[in-house]
Length: 154
Image (cartoon, rainbow, N blue to C red):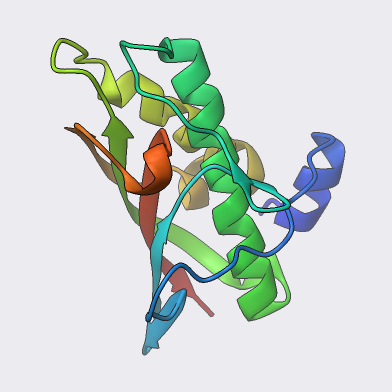
């Protein structure tokens, strides 16, 4: 079983600082051994996010980078909440929203940036989840990607 903390180091990845709350909600809600993570964007730290619209001022590679950064922001929230990423036993479901122009239809390819990160951190069995990728015409603050998660914890 992959140790996600060691994988982060091995991949040379750094988690962003903790995300500021953007409203009245909880970043994580736990029911039994299932945790629901609120939607996160591609947070860079210091109040900055990756912004832009796919098919307008961003291409698929830019979107994948934003989805990957969103994954790092989600990992930061998991680390803050559970102290140890090894408590995550399975990524169950990811729901991704991609800020897209009407002609852009490659939302699943954009979400691969997130999915590949989770696979690299947690391994194939624990990190590859069920997933949906939805195009939307706008996201809060013009962020390019928003992802919410359902995970299993020990």
